Length: 152
Image 1 (cartoon, one colour):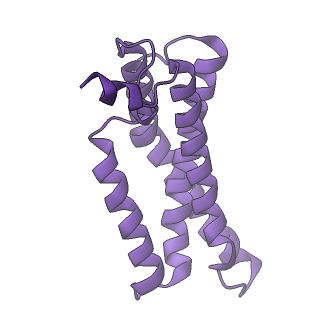
Image 2 (spheres, helix red, strand yellow):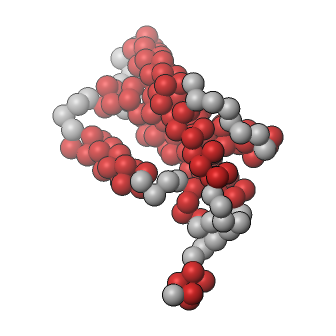
Image 3 (cartoon, rainbow, N blue to C red):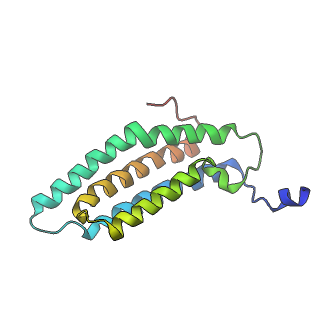
């Protein structure tokens, strides 16, 4: 069984925090970039209204959802006893099925849903912005070394 442990891709906790931040930022930017052409240009007012609704939703998702999750994740990473935890421990193991469901739902909505793309854009911008803003907690933790504080 010792040979199995040798196969584990162990890394320093710094890399777990950095990988988490990069993943959250990257997915956030990706989701927002998907919506670039989803809002029909029928006037600047409509485009701005959809974007503004997405930004408001994103702030709510960040404040009441993803920021708490990111803070708990940073604390969880710091509490890992191993000096070289598995590289995949940047997310809790229970989060991986949720991520798979979210990816599947996103693909389904984008490809098969009868919901207009401009309506989906509000949700995609909201989730993307929430992820991106929450990723900043990982960078703050890397920069300062401080715990992110209590949950909101």
